Image (cartoon, rainbow, N blue to C red):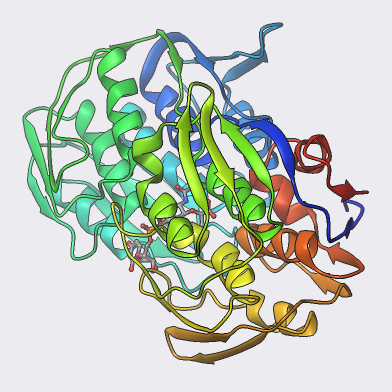
Length: 415
Ligand code: EPZ
């Protein structure tokens, strides 16, 4: 188990920090490599826990993964790659469910143990299964496993009741090697979906419309390896931006794609921060006073749910009351109890958290309950009076590469 993250608050963050590759693009593109003949070399993949676990799962199925001197990740998948994810590894990572689509596409069968990962709601897979069944797969959910088999797969039209990121990704991946045209309606539009489509097209697939509500995939017979660099992590960027505002700092967040950050930029500007594009990325200047704002999380291009906890932390010291509505997950306010231990005044009613700003937070012992809750507690700790000890810091290392190091490089007192 990792050491707790110990942070002494009260120091404005200053300097510049480089954002790593996107966790949620890296995981799905690593899974998509199962569809590819020969070697794929991926660049800008972050060395985070979730990447290591998914890498271990791929290796246990027979893939060969090697990290290059230049930090790139080479993945070579044999034709007879295994089709059953090992429980002890898959239970640690919800994204292991993305192997359902790529294994079904490659081997016409898959046996995925229902994943674990963060505890932010039931996170069913009904839309994944509906999509794969529409393409002709025989899908069964039993004894904590999803089993999918396909004698024949045929392109088809799938409507997603909710623009699920994972379901969109699984259906896209199977469809690339499914004869005929597959149309996904009400598809997720996140930048990570576009990155997956760009990767799939780079290895020879025919995916159109990614980033819009309707994605069309023409099946092809095989995909061939290439070299591909994943996009930067917009949630890591947003987390450092929120920390800069929270501490009244002045930070340049480098290696970002500003269009991916518009909802986050807009909301942080509403709190009173100054955010300007500079050649290296975005310069974020907090002026010490946080204005209250109302937030509704929504699928992209709405405000991202993965930034909701970090905003709760920031708004807990706003000069007024903020309303935060979580519309994507049914249970993503676990961090409220821990922020309250630091003196925050937050009341949760169903999907809504009412945040009454207090003059300051006080450092104490807290525990991370999921990846973004851990990040939120770090934001709170950076601006709190005194020392905060964040337990279960392993959650943070699931998704943030060299997190403590990057904070220290901005002048934070982190142990
Ligand atoms: C992806 O999870 C991300 N994870 C999550 O990031 C992110 O919060 C989420 O998308 C939303 O943006 C990865 O990409 C690895 P969903 P995913 O399917 O695909 C419901 C992080 O911190 N749903 O879009 O699991 C579901 O219960 C993580 O980096 C169904 O009802 O998210 C949830 O309420 C956390 N049936 C909502 O949709 C289904 O079949 C959004 O889920 C699938 C989903």
